[in-house]
Length: 429
Image (cartoon, rainbow, N blue to C red; front, side, top):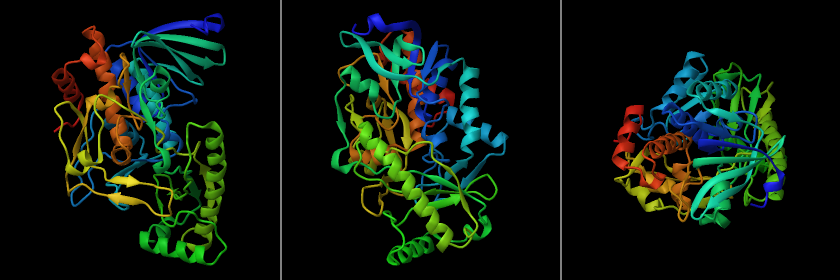
């Protein structure tokens, strides 16, 4: 072990979750609620990932189309209920094509994620970055994390990679692919305060985009994306955007990611200037907040025991090892000025198979969130936060079951896993 002389501390746990985003936080809560000794390692000082540092809306809970059918349940419902108890959540209709959204206050959500995790018994470790893995043959046995106190060795019986970029899986030798030339663009979101929300909310999507085209034609604004959205928030006088677009970035390259952060903030200021100058309701607005980091949609995608495909998505395919459902469209934020949408038949859903969370060539590891085993197009549908939370719930439950039965995650009885997920409130049918 190359780090042995530099290890400052060694700890052990039953389940280790790497990454505290919506997938990882849900996975840790699920495992801990079922009695597994669970440790979650997160590089920032809070939970939630994209859900608390970039976005303010859960998508994927409901199908788009003529009727909004709920397809996500269980621990995700507990999150939404806790937000509702504090009056910090609103439901938004299918305005931009992705289905009914659940919009919330991200700062409140940070506290809720922590509260539910601690109540479940999850041990949290913030400001720590996993830099390498430990293996024994084909099984992953632990990780090396860099902390303020030095290098920390964490031994675990089961590890859940919720890093977003498949960092643990890649280090363990799991086959993966980079998104390559098709990679979806990155986005820096921002909040505008002092908005006349009543007037601003009356501006339709088409009118917003028409005004944007006119502003670009004037030659006074540099707006790479010629569409995007701006929506209401539970807080008074606040509107939240999803407009900027930074394309052709490998988010696993730290130098490229650094430049993307800089460009994303530059664009955010430019789009804010456009809104103030051109759109009713924003005349006295100011930028109130920028996303903590730029939002990454796609980087590494692992090869698992099954690879979800575009054909699976558009056909609404069902699987015997289903652990969640998804009805979200293929939403491809390519490097151009628009977004490409492809929809399932009205009201249809497809299943997410458990095998898509099981990486090839490595045992003792589950992969959840946007780095699951899926092709580019399927990924552009299944990466919604509702589905990431559902994947986390399934992985945490599978990890607990594997401990109970003293088996590997890929050896867990699927029927038992599905029964337990239904008992938790997951929607599988």
